Length: 405
Image 1: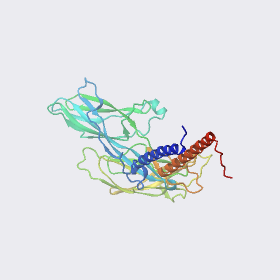
Image 2: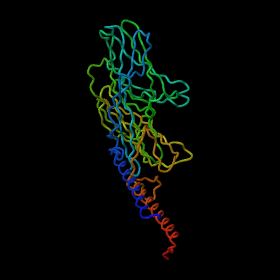
Image 3: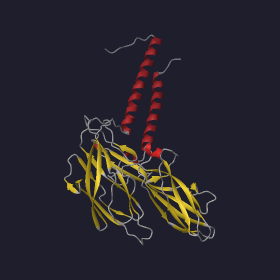
Image 4: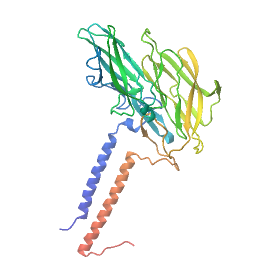
C-alpha cells in the first residue's frame, strides 16, 4: 500500500490547528488583571484581591484543657491588598499580600464572668535572628471587643485583628514564632494559647502604630537598586486606646522637601528622587493603611562603593499638627544583571512592554507572538515531512527527482 503524503500533511495540520486553538483558549482565559496593570500605587482589582472568608470552626490554637479560662482561636479570614507600579521601559510591576488577618476567638469561662483579652510578645529565638529568619518584629493586634462576658452557657466571643504578621501556611522553625493570646478573668484565673505567626518582610521595620495623633516615623527607611525604580510599602495604623470615645479619622498629608542633615533641609539631589504617590490620605481608627513610596535613581554601578545613602526631609501634617521627619534611603550600587528588577516586598507579577531598540532588556513575548512561533515551527515540520515522504515515494516508483537550479 502506497503512502499518501497529502493525507499525512492533512492529519498533521489538523493536530496543529487543535493545539493552536487550545493555546488561544488558554490565553483568553487569563484574567485581564494578570495581563494589564493599573494606576501607580492604586489597588489593582483582580480575583485574588479583597476579602477572603475562612471556616471559623477550624481551630488553629487553643489553651490547655485544664486552664481556668480556655481560649479557642479559629482559622483567620483576611484582606488581600493589590498594588501596581510603573517600571522601566513601560513595564508595570504588581504586588499582592495579606493586609491583615481576623481570627475568631471563643472564650470558655464561668457564666457571668468578665474576661480581658490581650496579646503577649512574640520573641524570636537566637537561632532565628542569627539565620536572618525573623525581621520586622513590630506587629499590631486589636481585640474587638477586648473585654467580654461569658453568657449563661459559659461562652464569650471576640475577634483578633493582626497586621505585620500572618499565620504561616506551612510550619517553619526558621521563621515561625508563637504569639501568646492571654485571657484574664475578673474573678481570678487565666488561660493562654500560642498562635503561630510569621513576621512580614519589607523595608519598613514593621507596622507604624499611632496611638495618638503624632508624626509617622519611617524607622530604618527604604532600600533601592542602582538604575532601577523601587516602590516599598509602609503599613500605618491609627490605634487609639480602648478608653477613647468615638475617635475620629486622622487627616494626613506628606511632602518630600529635600535632603535632611542635622535638622536642616537641603536641595533635592539630581540623581535620586523620592515621592509619595498617595500624598494625602485618611487614617481610620483601627484600620491598616499601606503607604507606597516611589524611589527612582540615575546612579551608576560601582565596584568600590556598596551603597549610596541619603536622608530626605518629609513634611507631615497629621491632624492639626505639622512635623518634619527623616526618611533614610539606601541604594545598592552593585549591578545584579541587565534587565533585572529592583527589590520587591512581596510576590510580584510583571506585565512588560517591549524593550527599546538596542536595549539590554530580556526578550518579552505576547500570547499572539507565542502562537505565531508555534505556527511557524509546525509549518516547518509539515514541509520537511511532506518533502521526505515525496522523496521516498519517488524512490519506490523510480520517478526521477527534479531539482530546481
